[in-house]
Image (cartoon, rainbow, N blue to C red; front, side, top):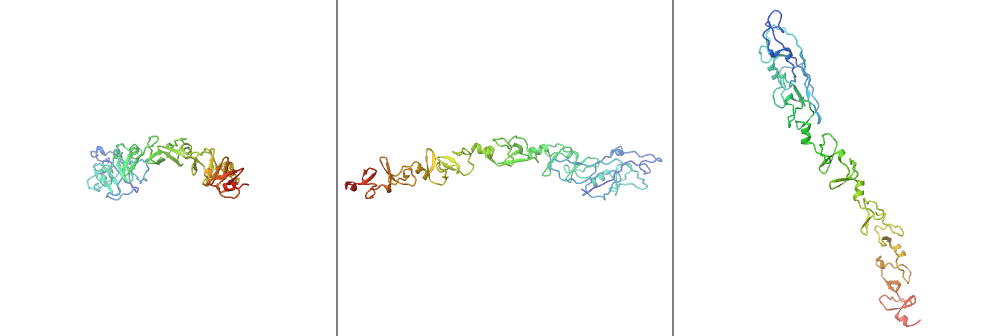
Length: 373
């Protein structure tokens, strides 16, 4: 709103037309409501209303400036009151209202650069319209304005509870004025932890349709604020990553530490890949064929060397009985043979599925045993 100044003069007129009354003639009967001290008006002329050009004041002034839109907590601006100065006008001709041409002798008037106005004409020409009640804000009314809107002091109130906002912080929501209590009740969310209102402008966290004060969003394990850290939800609880791993993550059967990624399962137990190694040679067993003895895992080579029976013919480990490689073997008394090694010691005929005759550390087919030495 551009700065606007308006001159105001008040007083009574003598019979000769002088103001105030001169010493040569008696004064006309004064208007008791038009005394010089009775005009303490707040004047905010509307630039859109028609009327004479407005310039600097002669007596009293009210300056206005456009305010920036306030944030959630705002205060209205109160127009400055006019100062009750006086001046003397020497009138030798008719002294009439510039609007209605009615005589101003003995009446309350307001002087402007374009001429004097009676009070009704001045209000109709220059007064602002209240945005609430749509009535003119008279020269003798107290006026508040906010974002190019003008209000009577009594009309500047919360649209919900009707509480006066003249000296209170307020919020404008969709062009409606709200006190802080009504705004928080209608538009602010409730903290899921403490149940208190999350005030506008304060820091908050949202997850899963719920809202928390920043200091109320805590790890359910260590009870430290989660802030912007990663967390793991578990039903109605929230855990920081270390607390979740300590509480819920599976643990390696060998080192008892938590498994956060990868891992293998052996005998229905989780293992780190780097922990599942051959007990004999420490070779990693993940992705390889292996077996176990006394719950300890072994690669095929180590198990054969350490635990598999030896072939009575070639003296190498027989691993077929362990299920490794699907090999087959033959046992007789305390001796064992690979299928490929179980043959007659003289003619080398395979004895698998055939009758044979033991001869010391050897086995013979029936033909060779009957032929004699």
